[in-house]
Amino acid sequence: MQRIGFLQTFWRALVFLPIGLVVALAACTREDLNELDGVGNIRIARDTTWTADRPILIEGSVNIEAGATLTIEAGTTIRMGERAFFAVGETSPGGLRIEGTWSRPVRILPKSTAVNWRGIHLFRTLHTTRFTYLEMEQAGDASSPAISALDLNFPIRNTTLSRCGGDGIELSYVSPTNIPWLQDVSIQTDKGNPISGHISLLLALSESLEFSAPYGGIYLQRGTLSATSCYFYNYTCPYIVRSELFIDAERVDFEAGTRVEFEHDGALSFGTYQQTAIHAQEVAFTGLSKRRSTNTWKGIVVNTKVFSEDSFFRECLFLNGGGGEERGSLVVYDVDGIEVSASRFVQSVGYGIVLVGDASIREQRQNRFEANRLGDITRRK
Image (cartoon, rainbow, N blue to C red; front, side, top):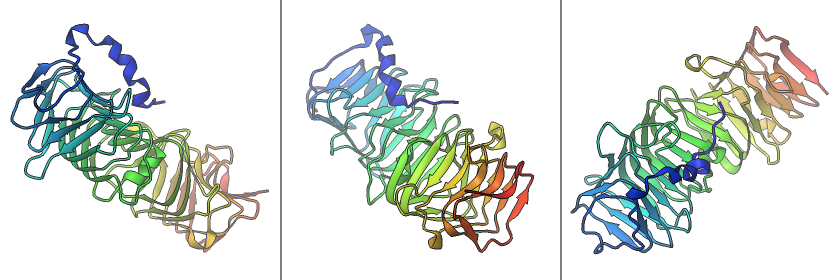
């Protein structure tokens, strides 16, 4: 099923908000708003601070723009109505600084357990933006993630998203960083994906993330990634690949036990333009799992820039691939001596392995081929 990025369609829906909800405040400061209790739409156009010493109930939008930053101090609890949301930098840059602590987190909750609110959506963000010790509950729905960002270029730390109505975090792009933007983040959703978006979201991940998503995964929708390194962590949920994705990195590592599931048009293509080393051991590359009805997918493509002496697929499973034009679950272009060992190639709709041009496999031992429709291995010019 094709999915469109939330931020591309979000603002179309706003025209349906009742006019009666609108309360437009051209500027807000700590002194201006002694009590935020049941207010409608708010526009924040100069630096503003919300503190824990007042009740806060928002029924409409909080629009932060015009170079302003909204700071939410430790211990603050905000309750949100069904139509309530935060929009940061939609018309001009804005900042949202959430400054919770371990003992006094910032909590953003629905006004009742019967409703979900509409989340936090970030467009053009100032350098002041950061989330620290944030707890969010019941944000988003099937068409709206709990948090979305056009460009993740700020840290999200020690944050918990509970009972998300759809996807947890949707990222249209992630700016490169030496330290992952997401650290000690926990996301729970029974209906969506913990994280979804552009393939660059891989750069935001860290081993400290925890996900609970029985019907979702790390949903990689589109894009090309060029980076120094790229790491696929073994989380409790799989990576789900929607389309053909391209990765060029000096080193691509898959943690042992990682699952990568592919939709029908899904593929991973490595080393097209930049020398790339692939380290994959005990990785399962499969069609979507049985809970979503298993289907075929295109394949894993090893292109000419892959460094053969430092690349391997060991003890991997390739299941239900071979649906691309190359007709192989694993396709190798002109890479002489890549290691493929102790791996299983099962139920390909084409071949298990396709070798193109001068491609060859070293240490091909203990590989198993089962029920591949066109055959096990073939060579093409």
